[in-house]
Amino acid sequence: MPRWDQKHRDALVLEERRLKAAELLRQGAYPSEVARRVAATPQAVNRWLRTIEKGGEEALHAKPRPGREPFVEEETLATLPEILARGALAFGYQTDIWTLRRISAVLEREWGIRYTKSGTWVLLKRSGYSWQRPSRQAREKDVAKVADWKRHSWPRFKKKPRRAAPSSSS
Image (cartoon, rainbow, N blue to C red; front, side, top):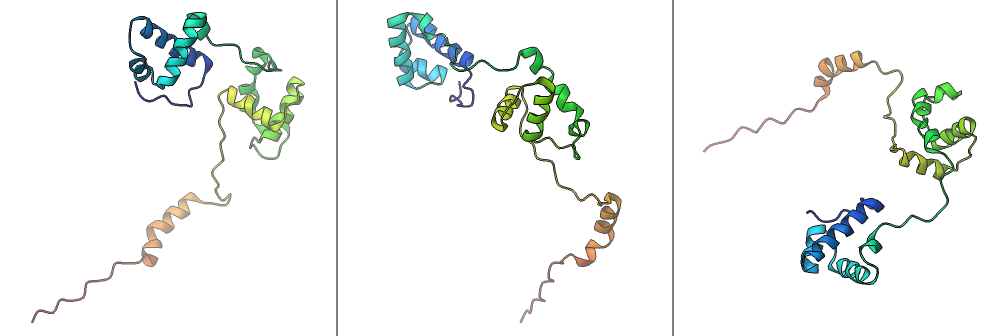
């Protein structure tokens, strides 16, 4: 198993790893071997072993994360892709580029829930969206003319390699 990747910090994935380690320990594997097989540190495996001794394997299960419940219900959150797919123009903006400020304003109008920019970002990440930046391109750009210029005009300006000086043999 490859080295543990810290970006996989999902509670259920971590619980699965701890329970796999518990199974290996029950089968008689040494903590160092268990650590290697589940891609954890030996210190973590020893800590899990002490936890099992105190509270059994049930103590290795993931605990609910503390914090406030999400404001939006899952059914409502499921409408987010539809809202974003309609585009910013459909909501009265002059360009079709979504910003966090625009999204939070639209969500307040649509759902009646007010989000900060950072809260909107968390909501988007939870829904599987990532940050994107549109590629810049001149509005006046004529692709056919650019291709024609590259084909016909550019070779005149392009530097050519120097010719080698004639070798003088004596």
